[in-house]
View 1 (cartoon, rainbow, N blue to C red):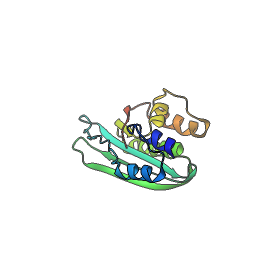
View 2 (cartoon, one colour):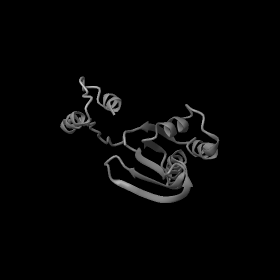
View 3 (cartoon, helix red, strand yellow):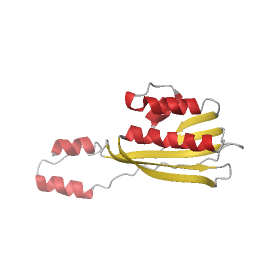
Length: 158
């Protein structure tokens, strides 16, 4: 227990050996919170901003995705979420991007900023990293549908 306290709270220099003393020290601890201010920036004129997310419970497990697309005024153009069955987190994040791409293709939106909290999917979608076999087809489809569009992929905080 003493080692655990030392690893989790390196600021404590003297860790007592007696259980009752250790409990007393731990009860006096106040956790420090790290706060990061996050601002949403509107996209440039004639562009849209797409916030996407996907997740699975269990990884793999029951998954879902969601996205919203906003214009330069910050107004929501469309928001959508759906259950996607048994998938991994990476698959869910990729499907979220794919659904945005499909919507933009159908509605002839040609200037897109993708904002995702998955750095992995961001890098794979940009072609910086190779996709795993499970999402290769989706990534190729995304890249094909975006080939005649201007787009940017940004990694954002959750």
